[in-house]
Image (tube, rainbow, N blue to C red; front, side, top):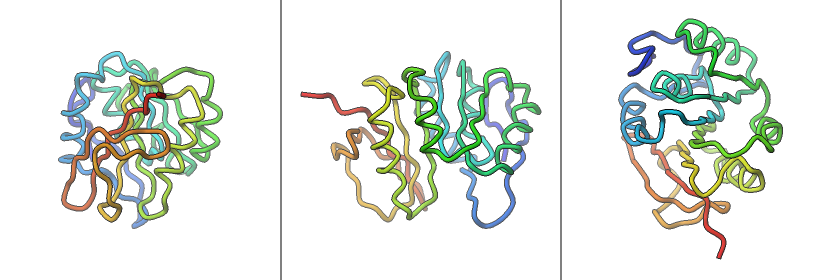
Length: 187
């Protein structure tokens, strides 16, 4: 696992050990950031279920002003901290080592993020649950891009609404997909 582009380009990142984690591959990460690139410079980026922090660190490397990482595993939080230090991106990175729901509630009141990325454990239904919680906070406004990484088992289509967010795009890969969402406008 490495940083693909930007200030920390090609720097290796530490990863969590074990079968319970599945880091986003370099190819998928590169595709994701090719889609997000116009919105990254100067952005506030929120990385939920952050794991080793590779997605938020990639955003910082590519010019995000700030990346907040929410991850409940202490081991993962230590790895995020080490990766931020190693890439010299620690100044823009802030880690909340707690459950995602608690972290979202703690951040409520800090204003909308430009991009929210979430990669919850597959097959547990956390995506819609977390989107519902976010919809009751000020962390996303009508301009926020929300990206949900999921496996291919659930059927979503552009235009569907999940917990107050409308699907604007779906990018499918071999074993998973990124669902791009925007807050649904109130009528």
